[in-house]
Amino acid sequence: MHISNSIPLSHDNSSQSSTLQVDFSYKKFQALISKVVKTSGPILTEHDKPSNPVYIVDFHPIKAPHMIVKSAIDSTTVGTGTLHPISIHADYEISGRKRQLKALKRFKTSYTHLSSAFSSTSSPVTMTWTSNCGFKTWDFICLDERQNAVAKFTANVWAVNKVGNIEFLGLKANSQAAREEIIITGLTLFYCILLRSTNLLSFFGAILARPGPIESEMKVD
Image (cartoon, rainbow, N blue to C red; front, side, top):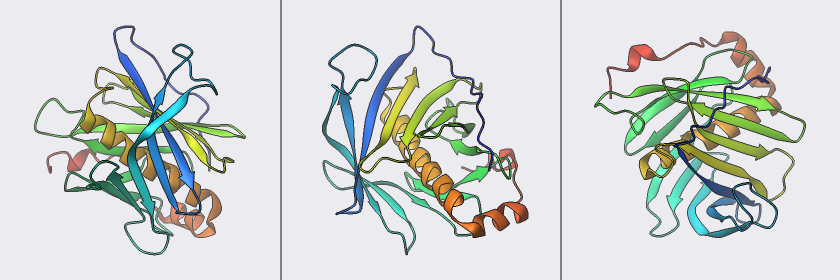
């Protein structure tokens, strides 16, 4: 599976940014998502420490949904993610809406989903996820309908506990709805690609898949 090494990542000087850290616990088989408190300027360093958890992610390898994101404050379910052993597409649910994270290419990390959080109307807009892969880290970039970067999920594939950081970009960097949508789709995509990289059935699923845009679904919200 090919992962792009060219990503249009641009930052508007007027935009805002904020970062969450994802830490995984094998003992509890769950991840904690916390705000990162920067102590040494705008660039993240090893000295920056996470705050108390904002979200808790429970994983269920056997039964769907395979990923459940809950609020760390009141345990309400924020959203879910579901993977498939053969299909290269994934499904997610947020705010009661069930939608698909659909592959645009068979053997390239390029996915799309419909977003209500980033839409300025009652109709959802098309978002695109692309990726840059290194030996140690995978960078997943979410682009809006104008191909502007709105989020970056940097994952360490060899990490034991600290999975990575989710950076929110642009004017909706501090929008709770936008952030939660990025968390659900970003984590679902990460584990979908991880599954595809370690599962032979996904290779045959890619051959049989029908990748492509989901613009025809935009009228249905």
